[in-house]
Image 1 (cartoon, rainbow, N blue to C red):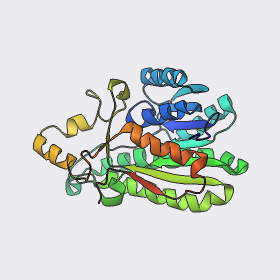
Image 2 (tube, rainbow, N blue to C red):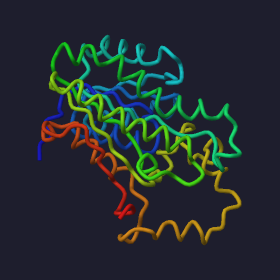
Image 3 (spheres, one colour):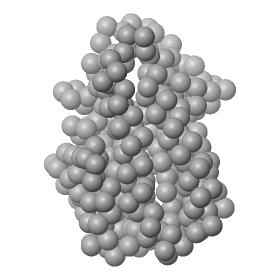
Image 4 (cartoon, rainbow, N blue to C red):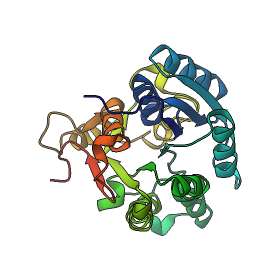
Length: 271
């Protein structure tokens, strides 16, 4: 099926690892002009090289920290300078800096979780919307989480922030639908990187800088295996490419009548 994405300009944040990298390369397969955003310059160069090899009409990497307050404006300006327009935005950046009982949490960590998961999405979306509204065309896809639907144990603030991403998706879809802009969200359960190339320094699973490699220390392996078997399928951990496939559909012309949706990619875990 031709998704009709060839030649479109697509911005992907957090594009150097795991889900973001898979999305960037999936879009490259469809012949987009790619703007990959991240902090790891070496990993960014690899994404751009791989994207071009896989069919992207063009690809650039922007080394920008989305926690900077002007990050959205800088991304939008650089994209327009290079390609003249912006057709697709994938807000993939998100994460958490702490894990544990909320009653014992440090209030300083709350703002960091909210900033990286919610505020980054707001900043970049706000920066690209005026042009999309003027052209009456655009696709915005946010990466949410099942944590935002049912809550992740020991991740109260992260779950709250993802829930806010879901709510933002729905409200924005109502606001901009009149301009032929669709806004949707993909909510994975658990996704692990596919191969070493998918673990940049920004990945939460990186052996040196990752969060989860530290957070899972001391947790019983049997408990982890039990969690992996909570759904009807043999596995409940998604491949990054499976999440990317949902994003590609929502970015395509095939999904022109789909908006305000939270598409779950979770192996039936929430059943």
